[in-house]
Amino acid sequence: MIRTLYRTPDGKTRTDLALADIPAALKEPGGLLWVDFENNPPQEDEPILLHTFGFHPLAVDDALQESHAPKVDDWDDYLYLVLHAIAFGRGDGEKLETIELDVFLGKKYIVTHHDQPIPAVNHVWDACQRDERYPSRGTDHILYRIIDDMVAAYMPVVEEVDEAIEALEDQIFDHPTPANLAELFQLKRSLLQLRRIIAPQREVLNKLARDDYPVIDAKDRVFFRDIYDHLVRLHDINESMRDLVGGAMDTYLSVINNRMNDIMKTLTVITTLFMPLSFLTGFFGMNFFSPVAQPLQSWTTLAAFGLTLAVMIGTPVAMIFWLRKRGWM
View 1 (cartoon, rainbow, N blue to C red):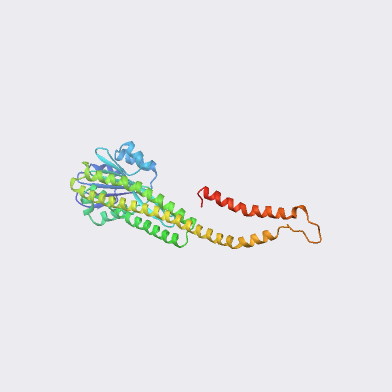
View 2 (cartoon, helix red, strand yellow):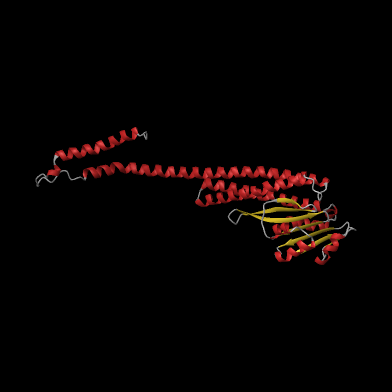
């Protein structure tokens, strides 16, 4: 799907601009154009990006073919940005999903490209149609609104991850299972993935707030600095949650070890209770004495009985000395 939003020089907003009219709209002074590509075949988008807008082939290839970490590239007349929206699937093994958003930002146009719907883009798109103040402040302000909505959507995801960690901690204390350990590892991978998104995206916003890009008005840099501060806090929260997951994993192992110790204690008590019975039945079940009516055999003499008794007593005594020598007692 390709949709266009064009603000004419006289302040009117149009959403019916044909692709063939884009070159004329770009040349018209005072106009502002936003073209959004959503889940469109690359072979259809490539000619528009290359020939209609004149973007560099490397930037177009990055947008259509490759997946990148958040970044910003300065191509003099325009900026190419890679940003990421996130979603947390509670019903999908606590998995964190990311959606890449590619943005081409010029003085008179902004081009967005994404393979899946992004709520932040749709929200700003609708706001630009309702309120003409959004597009009237320039393309850099539209970019700010998109990024601000995307970053604002990070916090509910972070809260969902935090709730998932708390729920797992309760399950671990009540009834730990191997499935809890698998969920902890999935949460750990999700938080690592979130860190790989937040950290470079924070640097992108830092560049937008501090570097002197011609397509970004100096008065709008303070807005990007505000988003940068939000990402700094989110990065700190993410690090704290990673520590919580590590602590939950340690707690899981401790609970499992304690349960194993309790099981071993129970088995030891049972073994200790039956040990005298086993000794008595084993000792008195040995045929050292033959019946009176029969003559004594050689293996039923008192000497054999005394030797066996000495071995039975001497073996545990020797083992006690050996264990003490090894430092095990």
